[in-house]
Amino acid sequence: MSTELLFLKDAYQKTGLATVIAHTSEGGVVLDKSLFYATSGGQPGDSGTLCWDNSEMVVATTIKVDRGAIALVPVDGQSLPPVGTEVSMELDWSKRHGHMRVHTALHLLSVVIPLPVSGGSIGAEKGRLDFNMPDAPEDKAVLQAQLQSLIDQDLPVLADSITNEELEANPGLVKTMSVSPPRGTGHIRLIRIGEGGAQVDLQPCGGTHVTRTGEIGKIRLGKVEKKGKVNRRIYLHLEA
Image (cartoon, rainbow, N blue to C red; front, side, top):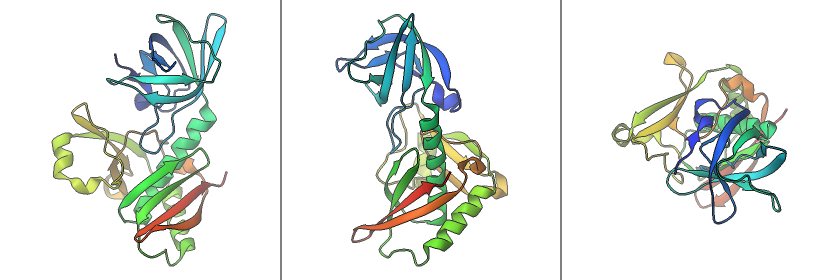
């Protein structure tokens, strides 16, 4: 039992058709294909709706289940579409698009702060990264200006891939120590920001992203929190 991950082919697809192939013991719905991203790597699972006949199920979140399948978790009290039913999927696009903008912005934050990342979290309006950073940044305003400059260059954001063996030979590609690169197919998905001599970032990632950095818009760096002897948490906010 596995689910075709439509969001990896086109993160901008908002609606589509799928067939219910199973129900989980916890009350989730497994589809043969999904627009809904499952919680992973600091990015929350998508929400939205499933429609069939004259019925509707509101999707609270999406999670991974066994053997390459993902399950849509309904809001409490919702009826599930029967196995074998064709359903119409509709994403909560505003929330997903916010995740895409924040996720890409956090990749760029790891460019202007070239230190190992020990954790992170993505929301629809803000996100954060935890860096191995013994001392707080000397000038947060300078970092924010550098980050905004990268965003304003409107660089292309592209998906690529390498083999497991190629990744093992290039360990420097992995910036986030707390999250393992997405494996299992023999190939590792990479997100590349910029091309050729204008490339600014390349790292393994299974999440959803905007196609150009200009789509992120204006950002603001928020609090810098001390989270340990050598750890600082930096928050990033979307301004519009």
